[in-house]
Length: 341
Ligand SMILES: [Zn+2]
Ligand SMILES: [Zn+2]
Image (cartoon, rainbow, N blue to C red):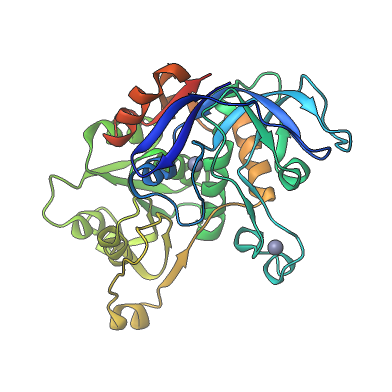
């Protein structure tokens, strides 16, 4: 089969490789759509500490089951499915206290999507492989995994009806945050440094836009848009830069919640004003990954038509054009790109 294989930093090659073999507990999926993701971009530019190359690049996809292991019960050949990229163990301390996103033994796979076929490991078959309703396209369904992370982040942010929420970063993740914050009944302020992304933010429901490249003080610009300049009830970071983490903390009102979602390069640090944290009673939250519950809810939101998937997926190319897709991804062109094998 054709596949884009990751060999190391800035080294992804189009190759002809074997179709994956499956165990009796696995299924084989013929990929119909794969999507690019910020994680892919970071992996291309920096590598990944947890995964040893070579492996097939990409992790967001939807497709058809073409082969089912003898021991698999709930799935059949021909079913349209979407899979998340992980499954928790359900046995460790964190799983037992209801925090499977930080499971000690997470079966995590950030690979397999930019190819014609992918095998689904058995823990994912059991917990995070979902049939796609007939009226949902493969493209929309492939959004399940990143959306599940955002559903997780929104549920941890405690947004109340009528709250003011600032979302810093209008990339794919920020744009999903904007849509879900609107569903939660918030007024949304969106900030970004790219005008085209802010336009999409507005289309998806953002009430106020701030082009951070045009203002002297991004924090003040946000606070000026909140009642009595007191700051946002909930401040969300969806960029993944330490300086934006620091700004996001300063945008929250007293007693507010700060959701630090964007993963920064490892080894980076931020500085927090201790007086601000203490006397303002801020709550700072790191949010990582998703859980089977949020994966299911993400597919529900897509199936209900509550998420505008088509505004997020701006381009489409065949797998054979993957080198071009890579260059677009590196240059932040488009939002999410669909790759069709
Ligand atoms: Zn992703
Ligand atoms: Zn666990």
